[in-house]
Image (cartoon, rainbow, N blue to C red; front, side, top):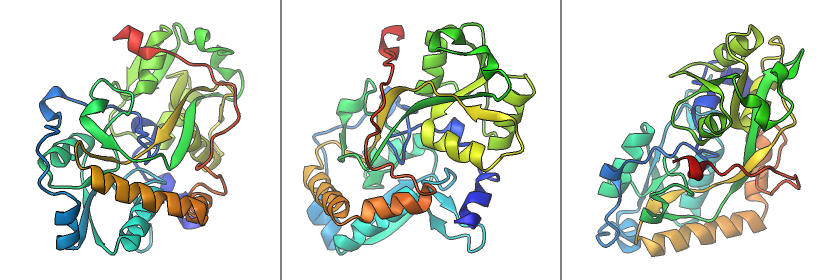
Amino acid sequence: MKDKMKWLVMLVAVFTLALVACGNDSQNSGEDTDTVSNDSNVTRDWDAIQESGVLKVATDGTYFPNSYHDSESNELTGFEVEIIREIADRLDLEVDFTEMGVDGMLTSLNSEEIDISSLGVDQDGENADKYNFTDPFKYSFGSMVVRESDNSGIESLEDLEGKKAAGAATTSYMKVARHFGAEEVIYDNSTNDQFLWDVANGRTDVVLNDYYGQVMATKNLPEIPVKVHDIFYNPSEGNFAIKKGNDELTNQVNQALADMREDGTLKDLSLEFYDGEDVTVKKDIDFEIVDIDEDE
């Protein structure tokens, strides 16, 4: 576990990825009308996958702890990666991972170059009805990182007005910041320590993102004087996306997930990759719901 946690510092920022749809735990819609699925044309269905003996899965390989390369072995691993491996094993299939960015995942999913996308589709986004979603395997919610000394002057979501919010432009988290009038400071392909140091040094004031990712980042960079605020909002679910109409594959994956939940496999994987946290159950927290759709 220590090796996994050290690797966090070297990875592309957790904060720039937001999918819950989490997985791995992501909320970046990454959706484009040019990549919307034609739901009536599925050729690589469950029968074809069984015949091939291979489940083709897209993952990004840079999002700790969901999908990343082990610092010693360089082997692809992570919470979502190991869930997929277990699902494939239970379905008597080999798994073939292809590492790619979000846009590539959607294009490849629609063209059936892959069977499952672990990132890229916001389940609540405008094009969500163009895809099948598996049952959730992760539950999370939004939080924010602020300066340890003064909470960056933020005691409520309304206090985001005028504050400098760091992150990727298209995430649902940045949409929350925008909703409350924050000044957007856009980062691309930045590391966790850069995000956190910029908050600590006052270049920015706040980073909004996934709670569990922020907890792990701040815990593993204790020298940076920032913290996760106790303001929580917009609960989310982590699911896998499948091409619309590939219903039997969706059913097979859902059955495997249900069995893994029942026999404790999902929980064990969560405890391993989320430093003892069980992300497979919902937290009993009074969340504030921010309707970012009304701003579209």
